[in-house]
Image (cartoon, rainbow, N blue to C red; front, side):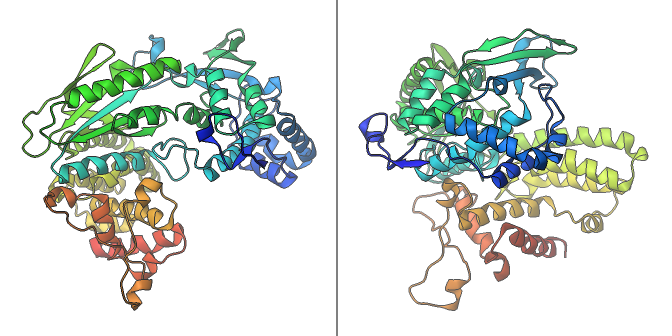
Length: 543
């Protein structure tokens, strides 16, 4: 329940119009939806398979409703729901399996405990959203946000700086075992400052304390161990609690004049400056020193081995290299750096990333080609779409505005994939194959993704930082076109680079959007929009 309050916990400047004092009981129908909508992942701690529980949930609904509502109203989590079976997962197949640091400890939790967490997550997220308590520069674990929107925000900032003849530094920070080192007392104090009190605060305190885990490795299971720090990886509430725990980091960064964007525990610092500024390294180092102090105070640690620096020199920049100091360690700039699965280079040409994607896709096609005689055409298509086309599509909106020659290697991969689906030789004409498969060419797929993101920005479902990049077209006189859903074009700024500005989402999205059919621009749902968009692009690119 949202209780009106004028004196919430925490400093006076954080006073909120309302406080979350308790979690509201749920109706049987709401409990039923929570149970049946959850993915039936069975954990060794579940007494019966979760799929079976979902099947018979109607018969058990009075008991499930009583169990969950009793927990919510009492502010108490049963101890049986605080047990976890930890399954160490190798972070990458190429890493050394004998090094324990290469494993991610994923907690397997009982199905009912995650159902209870979902009941709390809905109410907690609603409270935080209504009071604007979530960091707008955090894209992790948020509806409508993704690694792609986060990267688009970062590259847009870098391209805007380049268009204005500014140099930029991009610092990629990584935290070591961030989820596992969260201090419970600091987290609970943070929640109090956010207006969470009473039974709601007590429930979260109960959720965090008294937890235990067992490690399962092959056929062996360790003895139970108490868990006194961290939030469980694999839990429903853990990611949101981590975002709240690290929320104050943003003010530390902003106090030094740097901008930032986060995706979970991956933090990206951006600093754009005139090429003549010779105090850049000192300012960035001072910011990183304060970040290091904040990390220590919050029981977190920077992973210096994964901290990377990308320097993008502006026009007439007198130097082409940059080095900064982090905890007495020197970090020098590199030509490229991997960020959220995409390789960014210091010219934003994405040539290194395109080469990496092409190489990965060729390897996949080689392996699929070896088993192709054993596959039906339908099976081959499903396999190629899952392993190859998905790689071509990952964060492809970042490639918008690049010349055709830059993305040609990706198109050659798609051509090879289409031929492999039909088991045809290398030089077979590919256009009829793409039509048959209903595959848009790579350039059209980039445009398709950009338009889907633009639709979200127009309709208010995209992240606020994308919504801020576009604005509706308005006229001084009321004309018919005023109701046709057009977007205002980005004006060319004085002394800005036309080439760099032409690659901006803020420039391309209105340009492409205004060329869409009226039915697409005014579509009431994303499903309807996609239904109009694909045939439009299909006709334009494949005839």
